Image (tube, rainbow, N blue to C red):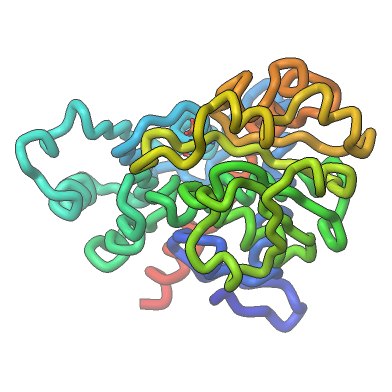
Length: 322
Ligand code: ASP
Ligand code: CP
């Protein structure tokens, strides 16, 4: 837990970012404010700053990624770090090397920050016990995807102001979505009212323990929403068939031009990506005037710069105090 200084400002002391569930509202807001400071970087002609000069960041991705991996790479290089790109497919994991041995070997090369995406929930947390480097979770199983949630709330705050009292719908495959879990924590901690929408078969176990409302009909809630976050069905994680057909799923839960007519005119349309156009969202909506989907991606860069900057600062402080 980060502490408050005498001026009331947060003293960031976390050298790992594993999940939003661990963070207080103040800590989330502190990351967002730090990200805001980095946002202007993208508009500069020379897009480099020195805070991570001499540091090494490894992107350890055991699952595919377009947005998260590339924006961590860009964020680290804008902060002047050296970046190692590790991919499971071309690594010695195929020869039987474990996750922990892989991480320890990379650390032996002088790695300071490990950014990890893994299909096993808990893998980033495990690494924090086995290596000294900072660990940043880039998505673990169905558990959490903290930087996605941070960029989501950053985007909402940027467009609509504070989240307090906003009604946000998260629609689709909640059960298998780490984005949904992190979003629920981030959005509710910032004061939004979250409704999960989807078929009962795609709701997580013990959903009643989460600080959310639940609906099984998008048509019942769409008119009330200020923000809608459409999720991809995580087909790669589904064991069986959670609904009769994709066409039927789209009919009940897809964000179509027709449904948009019943939404508030300024409802924000979000999606973490990758999208399955024509399944959870129609192309005209994804590319339409309410969509902030590409803005989310742009904001991911500033948010990830902030996260790398803060965990490195905490690690540097820890070393000084030893
Ligand atoms: N890209 C996000 C994730 O890795 C969402 C998705 O894949 O649907 O969790
Ligand atoms: N939103 C997201 O995490 O996208 P990638 O899987 O492409 O990183």
